Length: 245
Length: 326
Image (cartoon, rainbow over all chains, first blue to last red; front, side):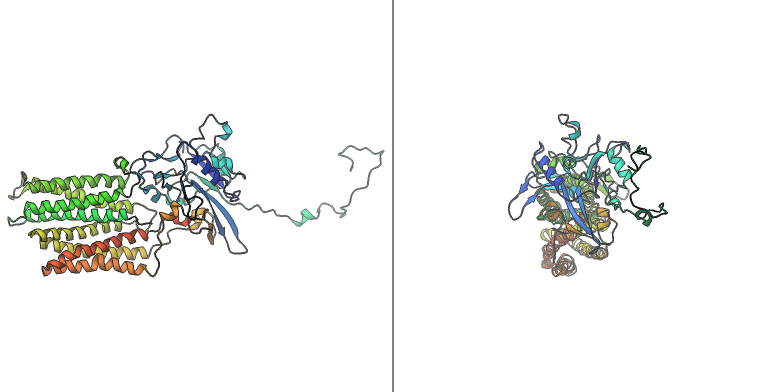
């Protein structure tokens, strides 16, 4: 890998399922120059809306040995994206310079064929605008030089209160994202589909503390005396390393 | 997957149109290489081409209803190197253009001899256009079938059987349509076309049977283990992240109740294949005209049912993420 490939790294060990990334994504991207992410009947009985990012919740195991897994899912910006070559108009494309998979809303004819060719279900069709939409990795803000440098990140990454989301170039081994993948057993979802997703997930990790008996009961105390040592006389030296004051 | 009626009409109508045009070319070729000097009238071929052109045109109109931006439709020819959909968009007007030329050349009797072979047979212009027409119709069958067969995330579709089925059903209904045109025009080719229509219908029946059997024995389409990367034997979804609909829950799901599905499959097999093949055989062997004419509309009902079931029974891999609302 030498070409730049921007991606998200999501730590499933940290995510608490608060949906802050979902709402901030919607807020940022619906307010941008690319047009709103349309909702129909938003306060009615049957709302339908476009989201680029969803947090889903899964449960593993049987009660009482269960574990809840919150799983944020947005476009994975695959390195071999199956949705791109099938687009008849070239509206769906993978950007050469940073590896972001994007849709040109002015070329999309709304045939929905790209969504059939995505195994992750992360493309959503905007019925009002009549075009296919998807996560842009906030392409409109990560290069925005009017923003302070530490704010040039996708909205979801900035919003996450727990810090479960990282953003960076995974083809650069020195990036924070690459290091996190390397050091914490980062993995791709559905690797068998051959899409080589760029977004990675970090697994749930259980931190267990092993306490041996000799750590509770001092082994190097042959007289079994645990009490305070006698207070030294004032006439004795009182430097810290030689007194028990 | 959700069946869109525009696509049901598109694929069934153009399939029939392509089959009809291939039938005309095959019929002409049958006479050209034959020992006798008999040949059907130019009017028959022109009428047949007009019917084929009308079917392809209706299909094209239906396809526009599938797009939200049909005004940008011309753009969809640019990715022909990688997209079967793009190839279909190029081949369909090509077939229509050639069908027009084929019909016009027959209508005006414009058939200058292009090549004469050693055995006194010759290739005239109408036959030459016919070969191009048949070839592009055959390629269009492949393109239409491959649009679905190359979607590897729907295991029911990702098989060569999809292309074979599309082709055989198109040939079957197209030859049946050509036989009707021949019967109306009182053409010599009537029995030839009816016989092959019956044969293609039976072949399509067999291929559909093989496909149904194959799809019944598919492995599970997805696993939650690899979908979320958690290596646990027992995982279930608690929430898909929202309580109502989204594109992902409407485009990729069709619920067919288990009581209705066998009836729909039965309707498809009887109307689409069994009844028309019997009627076509009756029309061919006994020259019973009403049977020959009745076969096609009955078959069309069956083919629409077939196409609806084809979509509705496709299980997309993405469905693994949309199992439970809350």
